[in-house]
Image 1 (cartoon, rainbow, N blue to C red):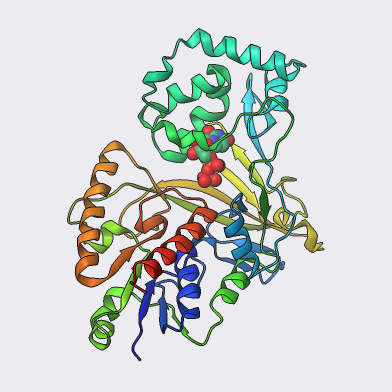
Image 2 (tube, rainbow, N blue to C red):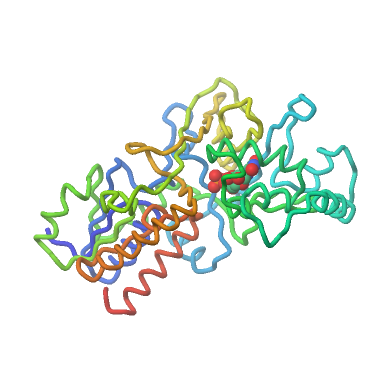
Length: 389
Ligand code: UDP
């Protein structure tokens, strides 16, 4: 069988692209080295408890982009889930649970106050001013953090959590990492501020399966691109290749290795109907080696799961090395330089072999799920408009 388009990697970018390409009448092959579709958004229903378990960590869909929201809703209904996270931190040696992202409840509990929004803002502003950070010279995550919330809250909720998560002291990390995390001077504790949020009503995998239901689509799992490349390109040397694996690996690391952070999950089924009372509990201190515990049943309160058990996962950050899954680009200044060179190499390759690099691993970019859907929709438009497809 010969294909017009070959997509390597059945994650969000890959499945979206395949869906769009198939509808134009092209014959499309989607391959993945894993045994399942969905990439890191993959989930499965635990056989014993019926609980949907996100196998690669908590994935909450949220977006403010109307085009992305319309697109995903073609393949699944979405629940009304809205994400709320708590964190455990030892205040004066005593573990306490605080609300995240840092909001008025967090500030008042932490400082033992009953501030109004204006009072809290002034109080935090005074703490920030004491630090005398020059906003024009923010060099690392430490400067960024204390110029946003002052030192006491930074030390409690950000410093150690971030160091655990990125396996690096905050002085060595890039400031952008925490610009993701809002700080609010009201009691709104929704984790995300997007217009739309929810989870696929019948699970992530059902949504991806619906995206791939088309006669022009062939899915081949447990398949490594480099094992079948020669044979497939012999059949159609002009096939468009969309590669969503790690860009440095594709080029056999010829320009050096990009830094990734990996994650490891320790899944447990416990004989407790409700283990922690919320879907995600972060652990802000160094005493716990894990960064957070996920309790999956709380993602789907609408399912009324009657089980007396619960499935939880302890999440540990790991430094990436060859052979383990890359999750997050670390993006040090050196990484940025190396990526730029790989990108040039990739652009040159496109002229010769029609390979495009895409997705979180292909573009070495820390993107939320909705950004990846959007990138795929826009990349497809671009290729149609410039006559590639
Ligand atoms: N963060 C933190 N403390 C927390 C939660 C988040 O310091 O309790 C910081 C940390 O630097 C992290 C960033 O905010 O890398 C983004 O966190 P989030 O949980 O949104 O990232 P995810 O890993 O879920 O993409």
